[in-house]
Amino acid sequence: MSMIPLPEPFLESALTNISYNLPSNPCVPMDFETIDAALAHCSRTPMKMLEDDSEYDYSATGTVCLLPGVYKERIVVKGEVWGVGSTGNKAVSIRACFPQHGATIMHYTDSQDAKNQPCVSVSTRDAETFEGVQKGISVNLSHLALVHSTSGSDLWGGNTAVIVDGARAQVTMNSCVVQSHSGRGIVVTNQAQLQMSESTVCDCAATGFYLGDWGSRAHVTGCNIVRNGFGSRKKLASDEGRQELDYVLTEWTRLRAGPNAGVSDAQFDVVPPGHSGIFIEGAMCWIENTLIASNCLTGTSVVRNGFLSLSGCDITQNTGNGHPISIEDEHDVGNNRLQGARIRGVFSKVQCAMITPTRKNTRKN
Image (cartoon, rainbow, N blue to C red; front, side, top):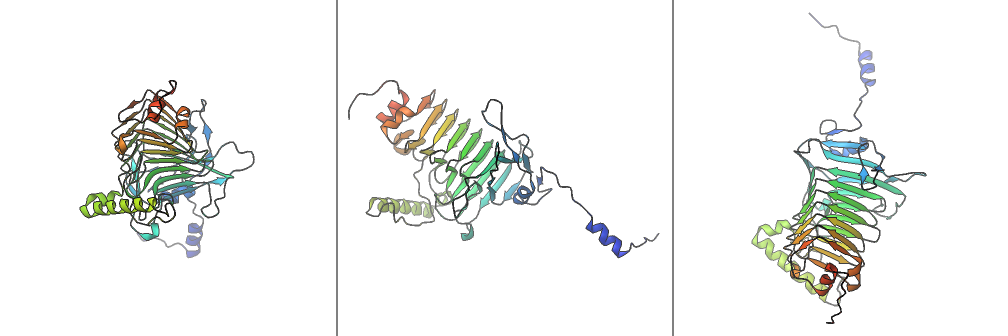
């Protein structure tokens, strides 16, 4: 039985009128080949707070679902215009379809074109003008592994696995693992906010979690901040690499001790060892039920009037001068709280005063 051919005009009309009803919560790679393409399609809806104002509610937001696998790409989420009468940021979620299996987002390259690029960037500021305070965005990341390594060593210029930057930039992370073999793990700056729970930041070349600038906030619950700050991970795998790390560390120390300290640092493509697990600079951080261990320098450092509240944490085996916690100025001690934490290490008088702030230390050096 032979088929009757259809007229060409009919075929053209039929193909032209086809419409694809893509889901509002796309799945990668079934609906889109890349996460970036799915984010461009995914609807962003106003974010709400839970009734007790304890955390954000992402249950009704657009969601990009990832099937198990490794997705080799860089994720950039920019803020949206904050309209008149807005009651909350627009929000979007990226999560694994199957929490028990998870999914991996990897930005791992030696290309100079990707020098100092983060793996995940959430920002409300324009990269050139630094404007954009009238923008906002909230992003939820859950059951993901975020693996990062790029060329370069600019820790202040983007060499980090996750960066959250700018006012009204908010990120919630749940059950995630963050690694950066070339830089920092997580950076939160310029009045951005982070809520992280049941996650791990480990094996980062530099600081595991950096929180900086007045107005920036973070709440960390039930996490692990471990084995960070030992320098570029790729270099640790060979004797030649370890020798290069030692050389870079010596050069950085020499330059910062000289007359041009802070002005003319050598631009190596290597991050030397000597970084804390958590570094808080002029910002506010609440940490609960978290393990902070085996980091190269201190477990936690607080400088420039930063605020730290520790509750029910284990801080142990951090190797920097034997100090698990470092606070820059003694007058900052009374502004920080430490409750029910188990700490192992050698303390300075400042750190002893932090543990028992109600009993003033009257001894003089």
